[in-house]
Length: 286
Image (tube, rainbow, N blue to C red; front, side, top):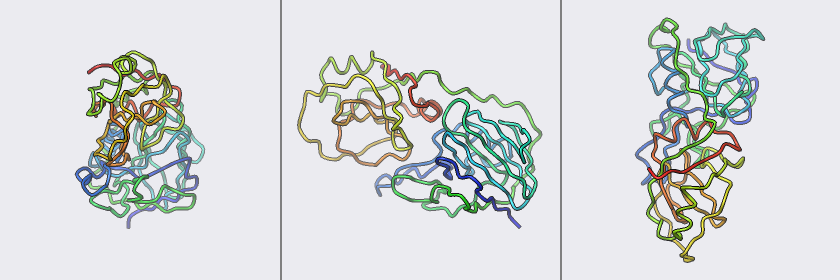
């Protein structure tokens, strides 16, 4: 019989995430999926799971779980304290949690998002081929709430012998290479220079939909209205306040504000996922 996890403490925002739903933008469905995909895959690898098996993605404050059967977990991503029934346990390595014991994944010490992988993976009901929670469209499981039950699958293979894993540290500064986007001509030459020379900071209003920035506004030369057009992961959209917003995994598939530039996806994976509010952001011509 498979295990279930009870959410004793759901935390600020804990969601089920896997590799997401690529290929459905024409239906108005964003990709979603783990913001720090490398961290998710490494945590799964430590347990012998498929790399993109569903995990729990926590935000800043972690979560607390109680399994009804013995399980093995690995907590990675943002470094955080981990305890089992109040006793310190390993972060970034497999940990055995007996039936009825309390696994506490604490607040992130650095970074933003921790990942709780379980041997066998989280087996919430898939929607369009993915178990990911999509905050924008509402597809997938709801964000975790206190008292929720989270189903766990049967491990397909034994947990491999423990080995040291190279966990990258969260960034002290975001350096994001960009290419000018389809609406760069809506901005003055001075604004384009500002984009790649000024230092911005991550706004506390950032979320899984977009990383908002604080800093000098970008001046538009075109004041007309832009019909909604397709948006991609990494699009740098400029709303009326002139401050760039970088679209992340739960972004809308269309938008009506001009896209001044696009950040390459590999630069987003861990960096943007783990940058807390106040982190310096620099855009560089890539």
